[in-house]
Length: 183
Image: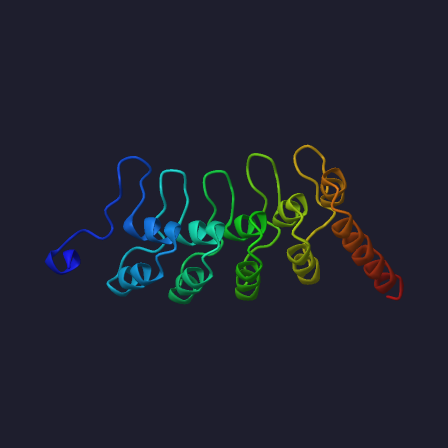
């Protein structure tokens, strides 16, 4: 095996700055990721755009790889150069189980990106990922926070025609209003 004769397992390509770990994470090569992690490959090394292996695996929906990276201590709150976090990426692409894993480990679910000010709940609302919106609301995501254009998650869900999400946020808001009125 190349690694046995001293191949550099952290060397990045000159195009995007991707390491072997990043490439394996992107393509869902679970066994290769496991081998690279076992020999000490850098699992937090980012490419030229700031994407980390865990962020790549989250965006592609490779649940087992995400679990391996989290178990070894990958930084689950590290954002890319545009301010996208792993949880925002998983929310955007509808990877419910990965979102659940990230929330369970304590990922920041209100962190917004740099360029448009979108939060994970906004991304899930935009794409119609009802179960993810439900998880985020249940954990306490800020559903009143607006992006840089002044759009709230409710506005985004309305614009996209996601009536189930609109109703979910409305129902959640009413429950909180009743709870706070009793205090």
